[in-house]
Amino acid sequence: MKSAYFLVAFALLAIASSFASAYDPSPLQDFCVAINDTKTGVFVNGKFCKDPKLVVASDFFLSGFDKPGNTSNAVGSAVTQAFVEQLLGLNTLGVSLVRIDFAPNGLNPPHTHPRGTEILVVQEGTLFVGFVSSNQDGNRLFTKVLNKGDVFVFPSGLIHFQLNIEETPAVAFSGLSSQNPGTITIANSVFGSNSPINPDVLTKAFMLDKNVIKYLQSHF
Ligand SMILES: *[C@@H]1O[C@H](CO)[C@@H](O)[C@H](O)[C@H]1NC(C)=O
Ligand SMILES: *[C@@H]1O[C@H](CO)[C@@H](O)[C@H](O)[C@H]1NC(C)=O
Image 1 (cartoon, protein in one colour):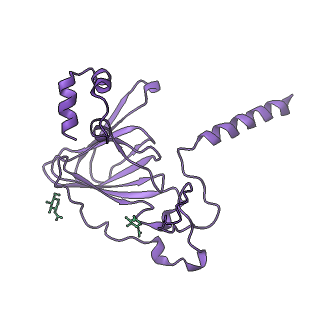
Image 2 (cartoon, helix red, strand yellow):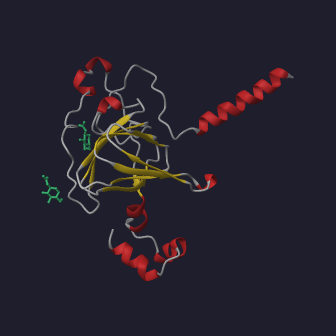
Image 3 (cartoon, helix red, strand yellow):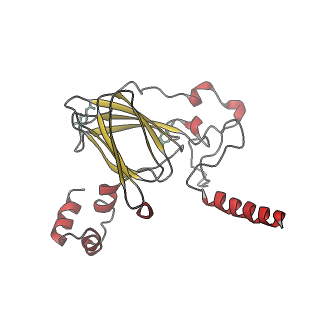
């Protein structure tokens, strides 16, 4: 009887882990430095591995994270990425890094990473940060003011933002739990999709006048 329970528990665990596809698969070798080439037109869940014998230290190296991004844009922030696209050695390893620069009062607007948890540390400045939990958890808002050296975690997939609340520039660095966490900026995806979402859909969804929706769509 006990072993039957064990088998059921084991089967449930196996099913649960097969659903945990929001995370990168574990590597099956020391490393799998990506070949930055899709000429073959074959797609896998990640990139093809370079022959390990041909791998060199520079495959694991990226420079430039000392340089601020260009924050001269509508929101006043810039994200510099070290995803697998920029750092081929990250392939299959389930981590990545970004540098986020903020102009005075700059905003990294509400967005989600569909494939990654984000852990952020403030290097300079003061940020008001937050995330919202899912519908099932009551869409609760969690916020904090972060100063230099403070760390905050944004759980995988949840909508989050960072606002520079000072009149001076700010900079933060974030680690993400995927080689390719993806980014969905809510306003851009909803109001700036290519092609546009039918305004009737957005009028109902946001409970706004259709003209407001059309105005928003014209701005993204
Ligand atoms: C920053 O971006 C703005 C807007 O795209 C551009 O006009 C400006 O030349 C850029 N500055 C630098 C230093 O690249
Ligand atoms: C890989 O290819 C992409 C797309 O062609 C390019 O933007 C990127 O800079 C390349 N990365 C490296 C590390 O060569």
